[in-house]
Image (cartoon, rainbow, N blue to C red):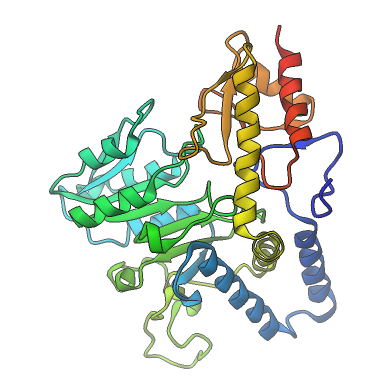
Length: 375
């Protein structure tokens, strides 16, 4: 058992693509923050701001942003996507490209633009050997933006973001990346991806509480987004409460209207310290991919189970989806959960999503449990 994850020995936790468990240090950080509130209130608020600044630095490093002030702290991925979707200056007839494999957040937000005359092109990429080419082929003269997940939640398919970014630049199209299924598990670098927008929540692979995520907007685009949320925190001179001639902050803080979620800030900063400082993101990615590779290898050896995810190195992520032709996936999922294998039902099958700390023994136990559930 990993010392940072003293989980119930009766469980095998394989739902990091849903809601990730906290490391021990994150629990400790939350307890310290709570104790400080009980005994001292906000007497040490300036030190809390130091933790917030440290978190921005970590998130900037996580995606390869130039500076911490390029990172906005938002409630969740949907809020970040909404800031983008309803901030851009759309014209009737403009197009947004998404695909049929996207999580609802990365569909509903764009569909909400219908009243403004924006057309949503939902490209069918299911079963495609080259989903990027289908997305590129859909680009036209009215296409303003492509929004795509770095990893598809229902299949685990990793997208070739660098290729899509290159096509977007060629066609002068904005690229929005929903990175919630990769950040914290796989390395991400804006230098190669060159996305205009990156959004993600911290409660999955980043192993932190729900309610806090990141929004990156390419600095040249920040002032092009019309703001729809206002408050004391998003102004250039935050803290100068007597000032009347306010203006939005020049940094990404312009997208943060009110008081920050300091509890989740302390938690996410602690979780990222494990991933970035102690383990290192290169090692995290290597172990995650080794775990999903182990699952894929075993699944291909089990005639009673069918691997649905693409096992190729270029496509594999932290997600593996499988099914049994002889048992309904809803029944199999229920039996796995009852046996302590914490997973999800997605993509037409059962989704396993191991993190770096999961062991091959745990993965074998989970698959053995699935096999034992078959008729």
